[in-house]
Amino acid sequence: ITLALCAPAPAETDLADLGRMLFFDTQLSLHETQSCASCHDPARAFSDPGTNDLAGAVSLGGNGSALGDRNAPSLTYARLTPAFSEQGGEFTGGLFHDGRAATLVEQAEEPILNPIEMALPNMRPLRDRVLNNPAYVELFEQLLGPDALASSRNALQSVATAIATFESSPEFAPFDSKYDRYLRGDVELSRVEELGRILFFSNLVNCNQCHVLDTRESRAGEVFTNYRYHNIGIPVNRRARHVNGLGEGHVDTGLLQNPGVRDPGQAGRFRVPSLRNVAVTGPYMHNGVFAELETATNFYNQYLVGSEASRINP
Image (cartoon, rainbow, N blue to C red):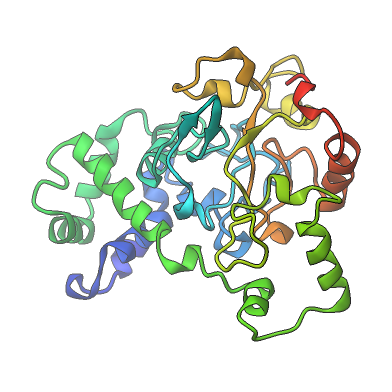
């Protein structure tokens, strides 16, 4: 039984509710084994649940064997990501590690048709599966109009719009961490936490050079990323490459894989991830090469702080 069959009456359902049903519905994948939640588990801040042989370093496809080459990023706070843009040679924003999706709707469309993810061969099977579910048909027509499923393209757009609406709900950006409550005056930080806060926002360790959007300290609504792109020389995840078959010699050119980027000098750059929910979203970095936060921190201390990291090759 899919979640859609247990849906509330259409009159009580909004577009975010429909998006929630679709987000957890495995029937939208070729083998009916994978949903959005398969790689974006709510219990892990909507990141990979880590249940495959690589502990979520890269994500498992719907066929139970295909593995990608990148770590599935958390979807928490994703709705706040600005559209991909470039100014003075500096690229900012966009969804995915290389910013290739300008909006949440574009991001939601891609995994459905990706051959190593949900793997539908084209848009037509998606429309057919939605049409086979009377509850979905009624909700789509009510919420997005009579043409919502009129064509395969319309169906994909409608499904992605509903999922993106769910991903834009407060559940994905609650701002309810201890730090948020500290800013509101609801709690006090421990001595160690306060020391960490001071260090984080200081120029001593430079965390705030990449992981702060608003450079003014103690601002509510901080997302802990500036959405920019950097190459810090992350090593190859040899174990992942052995399993996914790409081999250690394969080079993930990162930002250069974005269709909007032509400058070869951008190769090897990846968007700075948010540090929101970082305690539960490992393994870390775009390829999940670091299983533990401490290891990633040691790498950061060795190669990035005070180094000329921009000259490290991809």
